[in-house]
Image (tube, rainbow, N blue to C red; front, side, top):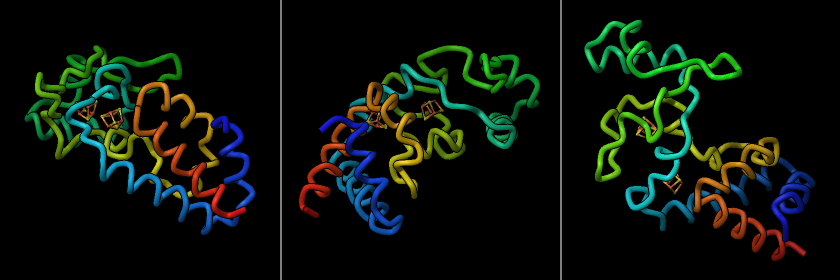
Length: 150
Ligand code: SF4
Ligand code: SF4
């Protein structure tokens, strides 16, 4: 089943039922995924970095916020802060995040498949499936559960 069709069927369900299915898929796939063997999201994609992320990370680095922004950030075409370089400047050679405890909220939530209302971010999730191998597994998992319903 194509991803668009999976999301179409997921969107037909009551929110609670759809969330149970997508969040179960998210939990089970990530329980079997070692992100330290991958780090594709940190290598090929920059999270949107919010003002509160800047404040938290700059404080952690003991650096004024304007200096942190000048050293690491740029504004993208939507006027949002992103990292200036890819791979991410905070990604270590062993794929660890060197600011893990204070990483941007978007990193902590990525690939956003644990959210309620996954069908509402279908377009974003389909884009993320090209970066994150876990997303494709999650979509297959959702598809299997949907087939069990009929
Ligand atoms: S801040 Fe950490 S989790 Fe976020 S992209 Fe960089 S290395 Fe990855
Ligand atoms: S791309 Fe997906 S599987 Fe790979 S490190 Fe990021 S979240 Fe984990």
